[in-house]
Image 1: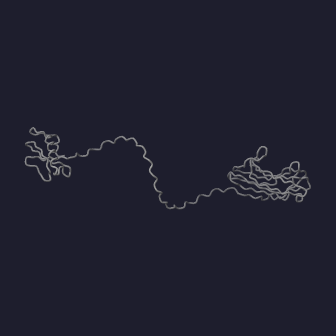
Image 2 (image 1 turned 120 degrees about the vertical axis):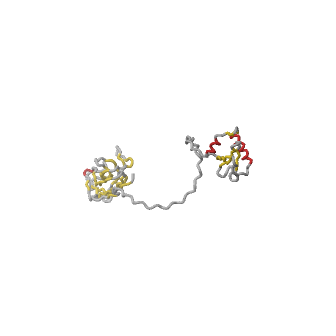
Image 3 (image 1 turned 30 degrees about the vertical axis):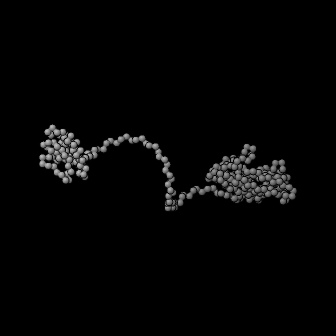
Length: 272
């Protein structure tokens, strides 16, 4: 603002005439001159102030100038922008708006490159072990007592059930063998029986293939109960085991020394 404008803003008086009143009158005059460019394009109001009489008149500076003996005054119709005030406190969060509708399904992106091949896992235990070395031509049962016809060592790298199978044939061998028994048992590293199979029993008669009967058995090994009955399937933890093929003559139906021929066995690991 110019020094002349500053003098106007402090409401100077001259010759007893109140400049503020004169300004109000000038404003009315401006309202009547609707066709004049007041304020101008820059928002400035121009006026002429008579030093002798204190008269103030608003003019359109683009077409009129102050007369001799008048002082040119000007002021903005709108003051300059003041400094920004301090930031107000954060308002309370409004309620969540409703969920908008689901947008359309986007187009399928391009297939990414094939990832690198993963590291190979550790080797598992053999799925099947045969009865190598268990084809015993002849095994004599002394006094019909239970004997081990053969065994297989098993090493498990992870828990598994074990399906075991065995076979062989009983022969009287001139004795009073009337019934032969075949079963399998699983012992752990401490030689403790932890699981066994059911029993396969064969009865011999005088016309049974020259006094011979062949037996076979195949079972998932089951938890051994205190009374030797079968319980749930046994899930063997990782570790070392021995699978045994057990043979005997039936109690009360055997005497002497019968023989067991062609013993063979195998096992298969199955899932937990």
